[in-house]
Length: 259
Image (cartoon, rainbow, N blue to C red; front, side, top):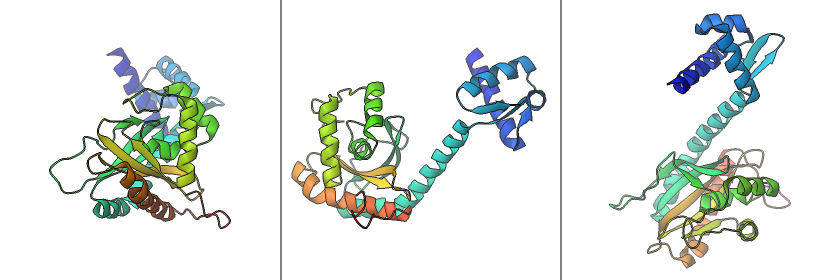
């Protein structure tokens, strides 16, 4: 229970700083939270090392890490709001499950899902976390991620095989990402889950940076490799472009944009 108590106290400190709206002396943090000053000093020291607070001239304020996390959450909400009608349209067009995902610390996080009206449903859920290297969503986003960052993700997360078809070497992943950039969409050819094939394309924000990705997923019985590449790929790519434009993305005239 000691660990839980520390977490409770940490959130109490962050909440006090957020409600104050300004830097606070440690004595004020202690008074507002009801915590002993030594405890506040100890927890503030830990939070400062992680960038969650800033200590300056004897006062404590919320740090860049908290602001970054808040910004990430707001961006996800904006992406989901902008993307939802396009996900519904795509699902109606193709009759398959459609996902919306973002890249978080080298993993794919599903933030929305639309399914066609049929008895058999995919096991995926909003909030689920999947590897980036084995999913269409992940490969679509990695393809437009800085190569150095991709190497860091691989070094940190590894290339764990999910099926016999999963990419398990950096060199092969780099070749795959180059192919994704060339055609504008990624294919998960039964690389993440047995019997499931997916197609994904990246979504860009107003700065031209990857904001997320959209994908179509289904069984190998309904999504052949030919259908994935010739039919679904262009459809998913166009849906991603529409969501990107809704986020303020404008293609570069000389190149036609990143998609």
